[in-house]
Image 1 (cartoon, rainbow, N blue to C red):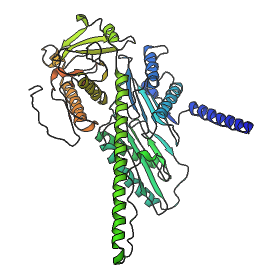
Image 2: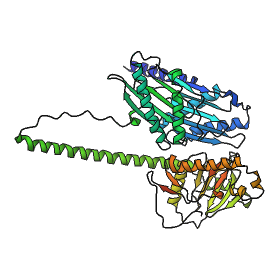
Image 3: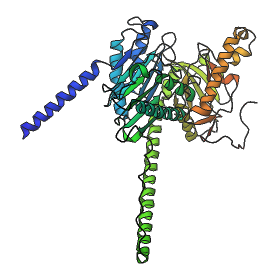
Length: 499
């Protein structure tokens, strides 16, 4: 008996070992962007790339299976995006990305830009890409990849294609309309009495509703190249993907709402003497159903609340800096590193031990904002991710200090250009239009496309920062106000902002 168990354990170990080995050997799809250039071995770009990719699994900032990170300074700055299918467990997502990062750098040695991933029925459903330019919030529909079933449709081809088109069109609209970071949708539709089609569509959460819908529609134009007669298929590009099959391939936890129950055929009316019994039974059953449903809803809401609290606690821990690190980075908040003074405190330039330049906002100690309100503001900013919003890197709440750590934006604020007679000469109309368009994109994200509807309330030139390429980034959310998703008006008891 013991010998038999040992053989089983050895067999399972061998299967597991070779499955992992095969998974680590090659990606199911990848592209090395050979026209985007190479980096030199042992260069700063290679060091930044390795540090960034390692950070994905060493201390991942997981946001519903979506990773967005950058590292270094221009011209050697590296940007990366990783995305998992939404029904994956966080641990499986991390494992998949870890395998992908090892293989992608091996398959694309010394390439500054690359993309690759896995797509199968197991845990391997992830995509990883990195580049030497800012890819966050940028819709890109090339390169594209196909993954399709071997079996062809042999009958009812017209009905099959029409059903697929209807199902995908519906899911495209649903996924695009969902707030970040949940831009995906699943569903099913009957092709015939015995065949049902299942589909999943997904965009990277940094896309706007319009860009997500445009990206998904672009993928359907490629259908004829791979999947027109196939029983299943998937089209993948850097910003979105869709998949359909005649078998259910996603977990029930993310499936769409259940279909309508089968109609109940009423029984013939009972005789009068049975009316009382029947009414008693019906009332008892209905009351029991209501009670059980109420308990289930209560337990579900409590579970979701606990999960949200755990996620927020994880986010807070991953963003927290210790005071000594910030003090060293800013040379003890020296005046030489001081960038400016605002209504809520001073801003300093700093450099972390890894060489990353940061902006440190040290809030005034006489601020009326308490510890709970400060943490809420940090968690709010951590959930806002857009290329036209300044990115929060972390915070510090020690020694009665309240400190925010942001990405460093080298060209200061917009007011240094439009109100300075010398710098104003360099502001061509092309640059002005680019800045105006970027600000509008950032506001659209805050008002319509983010998970939270935010009203900034203090938008002015000094709160618009400009990066090295003159891309605008909205900053300073100290006066921002949170709205409900369906709320368009609100009252206030104090006047804030800039007139």
